[in-house]
Image (cartoon, rainbow, N blue to C red):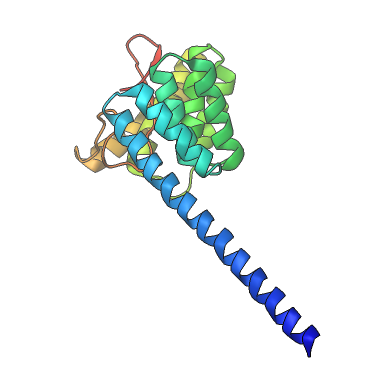
Length: 201
């Protein structure tokens, strides 16, 4: 009888411990969401140091949050902290290899390094993204066109530019191309065509 009571107490204690651990993880995830939303808001307001701080906290609380790495990478990019941006985009791709925004953003880093082969590979992968929004597809095809042109691949550049134009025409101006537009869940960079330097639009 004593053994059964002891087993019941041990089982109850184990359930209690598991419940506490579960509740702690739920609270951490909720806090991570708060810091992600706050960091993203600060990024949109160009309060970059504060954005990095909030997004770093979001990552600490939810280290598998792909969007937090991507958005912190954007903040680093804006601060011209390219090695840190590159690291965050790589981490986002380790967590989600098909992430369209992270593939695109890392491709832009490689454009800045004039490594157009790597950039092309990443933009091509971004173009294959499933469930992609028109916004991302437009950016990716513009970026593909840019890199193809840089590599002297004029036919491919024209084809990618044509796809970007088709997307823009079909959207009839409904795409929000302002930096960090409200129509997107996380944010992608695009290339400045006039100078050829990587930057946000």
